[in-house]
Image 1: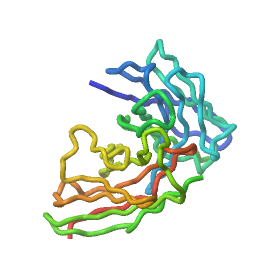
Image 2: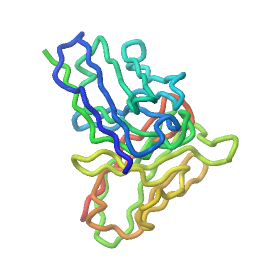
Image 3: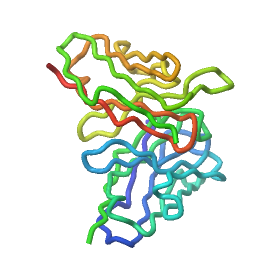
Image 4: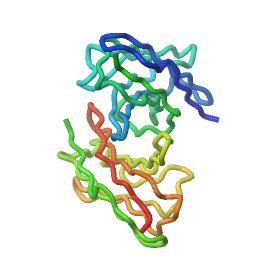
Length: 122
Length: 113
């Protein structure tokens, strides 16, 4: 069974840092791009970042560029999102999602985790 | 950035009737190599993650009921639920994967009339 499990969310003060993890199973992890999509409370979906299957290229939304860093370890079937300089507007459920192929623009997200909540507040 | 504009924001449809959701991209999202539009439709039920229904604008994901269909005309896209079922109550999103940043429409909430 293809599965994605996020962890690492929580309550953090503005300016703080948090590291999210996404553990994958049930598919050849290195063959697929992986991404993060977030959803603020009561709002729509916002793409945050994607790392390609090989792990050598990453893409970011302007709203997180320079503050968030996506990475993956294909030997551990795991992806991470290091989030620094967090702001209240980063408060959201963060979903880990699997691409349909190895690159950014070749397909939709076909598998999603249950999400992990990040709350940035003092 | 490519802006995805969905309409309506919400709609109420009787059980068994047709539901139509629209999505318009601010520029072409046609893939040059296969001449297909790089557009996906997702369904999100309350308290759940999104689920992909359609990709390449009109290709149904495996396991998705055939009452869901996607169509296209230039930069205008439509998701149709041919016969609304109670389990289809959800918010529906379109998304383009033609260019970074990937962008979603604002969502359309579908309810039972």
